[in-house]
Amino acid sequence: MSITIYGLDVAKRVFHLHWVEPSTGEIRSRKMGKPELIDFLSKRETGIVALEACGSAHWWRRKLMAIGHQVVLLHPKHVRAFVHGNKTNAADAHAIWTAVQQPGMRSVAGKTEEQQTMLALHRVRTALVKFRTAQVNQLRGLLYEFGLTFKSGHLAGLSEIRERMADIEEEIPDLLLELVREQLQRIDRVEADIKGAEKRIQQWLRRELTCKAIAAIPGIGPLTATALVATMGDATAFKSGREFAAFIGLVPRQSGTGGKIRLLGISKRGDSYLRTLLIHGARAVLARGREKAEWAEELRQRRPANVAAVALANKMARTAWAVIAHQRPYQNDYVSHRPA
Image 1 (cartoon, helix red, strand yellow):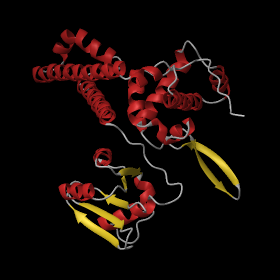
Image 2: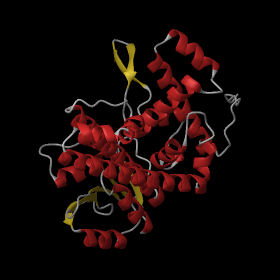
Image 3: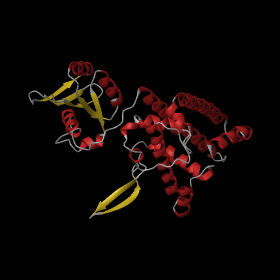
Image 4: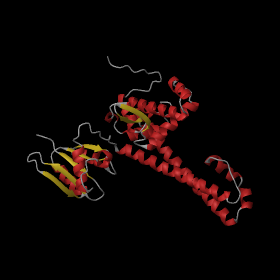
């Protein structure tokens, strides 16, 4: 008996399901609410449910797998090409149903509840860091209007502001002085929240053996290790380390015609946050790392610094995938061998 394939377009309240009855060949398209959809699929025989990797997609994946279905997540860009005519819920569901049956169609790796929670923690920390930067810049700007300048960098700048509070009191009006003190207190509260988020990240790092394994790779610290494991999801969803590096946009774009292919800058696809962490880690290794790879040093001598940093970040991502996928500890002098 053939397996039923469903194309599911998810939203907040309205869900559209498209499928073909295997026994009769009848094309079915149905709009349902959330409880109705779960009840309907729980009563159907095991099938393949495809949906776009958008908001709540990973929750739906876990929910539908719990009731016995196989779930495939597709990138929205791969689905868009199969939408015919106007874009509606029914058209999207039909496009998803068509896309999942295409040969060679790539799927998105699913994430566990814990991995999604860790990514949420990273997003909150990033927002807090941006807010802290905005508050410090605003404080600098307000004081600069009264002829006061301070050192660059938020740590050095804030330290100098606190040291020079006596001078600041003489230079600015009392109302502005009150605002400055409130701003400093607000920045202190944000700093405490950032440290709290980083403490939770460290706790997850110590619990998660996979994170501890890749944290041994030079250039990968607690933030990068936890973000990488949470973003990767299931390592077996990627065929190789190069495929994972391509997933996060650390491989060259290609442009070809007439049988000639030109390599351009990196594609910058996938998660920009993880890509940024890897590149910053690579820069730190090249600048002050104790154990520098010989090939990376040679590359830095003949190519721009950014090119060398991205090449090392690519290597770090591929190494991390190999450590996770093959479940082996990191070895600095490890040499892979092609099978005979």
